[in-house]
Amino acid sequence: VNDPPPQRLVLTHHRFEGATVRDILARAEKLGLSMARLPRLADLKTGIEDQNRIETQPIDVEDLLGRPQAVLDRDAMRALIANRKVLVTGAGGTIGGELVRQIADFDPTSITLVDASEYNLYQIDGELAESHAGLPRHAVLGDVRDRTRLDETFARYAPDLVFHAAALKHVPMVEANPLEGVLTNTIGSRNVAEACRSANVRLMVQISTDKAVNPTNVMGATKRLGESYGQALDLEARENGGTRFVTVRFGNVLGSTGSVVPLFQRQIAQGGPVTVTDPEVTRYFMSVREAVELVLQASAIGEADGAACGKIFELEMGEPVRIVDLAHQMIRLAGYTPGEDIAVTFIGLRPGEKMQEELLHASEAVVPTTNPNLCLANPRTADLPLLKRALDELEDAARARREEQVLAMIQRLVPEFGSEATPAALSR
Image 1 (cartoon, one colour):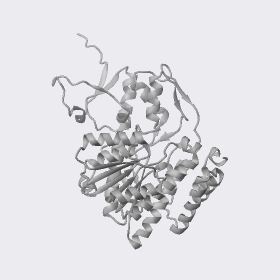
Image 2 (cartoon, one colour):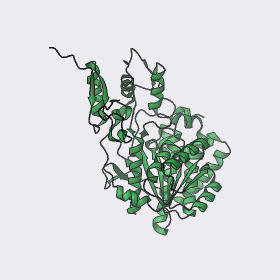
Image 3 (tube, rainbow, N blue to C red):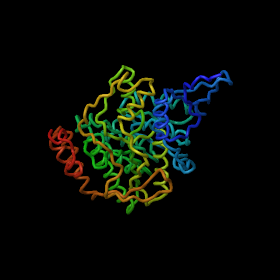
Image 4 (cartoon, rainbow, N blue to C red):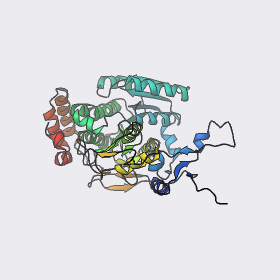
């Protein structure tokens, strides 16, 4: 009797690297097989009605881009958080929200949620009320641009640790609105840092981006200036005491606001076309869960090792992924054939975008850490009094809406931006 040919390939192991899953998917497609996976243990927490029937699940984007599980020192992470008052800016965003969830699991004394979006703040506050009902929390509607509001909040809730995740992150949007990028990403970061110092916060952790390295866009340049201010303050703290500062950089986070993944999902659901900027463009990807775990791990290392404070923690992002390959794979996962059922079109790089992102500047010498998923780089530091005066001038120009002057100042303060910035940014 001839057995019927297989129709589906099922993954039963959940620690495959993304490259392996992508290779299996390509082979399965050539054989005409669909792919699925068994549920993860976490998916079975609530139990199933029929213990003899476990439904397979679709392969998702995180499977395609997954990496080996990072080894984490959870005891060190708990020691960082437990019995301390924590404040998170941008608490309702993708990174900020995940920070809140993971921090809450490590038994802080209280948590203060700061966000400029009423809806995002309402959402994360309500979620925390359900998941950690006994945890004292404070929902603060406020903008990091508003120094008075920050000082008032810090004085009232006296945080020990601050995680600064509030930022404008969408490259083309900030490119079209550069003054807003300056006021939020640069001046907002300075405001948070100064509020930390005034309130004697123990440690401030600044969430940054790989786009701050050799930035060709306003978003990356404004984030680089925010990094610089914290690093300059940390040099002073080493000599005179006070708040210490840690910077953590990483690349794209799956499913975050402005991410290409939800865009592709919407385009596929609408029947296409799926739009890709360039056939050779690549990006680094990481799940939000893993990114935040490593942020907390880096923060624990930074607090325990005074020499690591002020430096840049760079998350090990794995291999970059070609965006056109990701588009094809997502179309296949949805059960369609790229180029036949769903078209893929190339629209050209948008203002400020790079072909490939970089993780470190050539002058940022790398040193190892105790975790292989984290590397530590010595930053290029600026003179604090000079930087303070420059940022005062930058803020005055931005608030006066002098866009051309602001862009010229960014070009001077971040020379890499001036050498490679897009014509759209520099010709305003």
